[in-house]
Length: 458
Image (tube, rainbow, N blue to C red; front, side, top):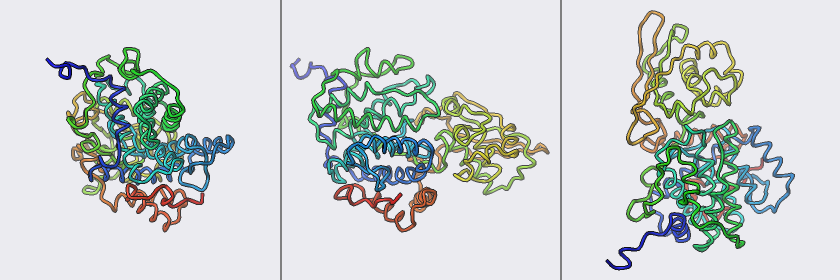
């Protein structure tokens, strides 16, 4: 056997560093570009939606107080800060309402888009380079997540908080054009920044992931060294996170042989401003109501069926705030039945606390199944709801396998624009400016640079 045949593959950390250092626009396919444009467009929308949230206002105020180098725009506004601070605030805004996209149980665009916009602003990167950085971050992030068979949320980990910093470092390294050693050190340092247990501080997790990734890349560029095997080491990130200790750190990271994750998985856009695990249930109820009007006053019982892993991320069974309601299956079922929709208008404390909502939530009895869809293992084969009326009559919704906006059933352009305008109106973005921003993000990979993106006055 020749030496080349017997040689072991490089450690995972080194493989990902080599991948990152070699990433450029030449590798982008039309399919990749489609998902990148969608990610930037939807993330811009949810940044608008989160602009006036308390967590955004607080972190934005702190960024002003620190008065760092004004190299990057904060939330696409006239206000500027250092790239790490700008990415921190923008990512927090993007994740503030939990309306941002998701893939492999993480929130890639809420972290990657703010990072890329901030770093590109600082270093003068082109749209092509921004798109390449997004794909690189997506691929490394997804690769790490899909190598872990255990369910991180069940153990309390927020995957976006623990893998987001690594992806952010990868995207930053691509834009900063770090060499292999620099990329490896950036990845290694970002892994040491990983952390974040599931809580209502979730927006901070996205923000800190974005900020940490940029800092890691900058430390690496400045010459700081870090462990060369931080991902695969028995004492490294992957083993430390693994709930059952079955993480795969030995399979080579080879996009040529394995194919690109972004082409296979894409992005799932949330039609409703609630946790991703609730989207199919909302679709099911609204679909039924469009065909069969139901008098909510005559409902005796509501029985949604969902998978065990989805149930874990919806722990609030009688929420009293809009923040809790986002992670409550009882709430989304009640709101959908009472209003025939679940939007920003329903996500307010007054509606959540109203007598009708609180009473309807008490009629919800969740049916949990251990069965799962092999193509979507965190979910049941399908979600549906059984509605029992006072006279004993039952209505059963259609079984929903993929929610509207899922990569398999993407939102039509007009529906994406509807979400964009809803978010923009909430932030008082003028309609003409919203249109320009939407159109710009729909060609992000073709821009000369961040300077081509219109600026918000707020």
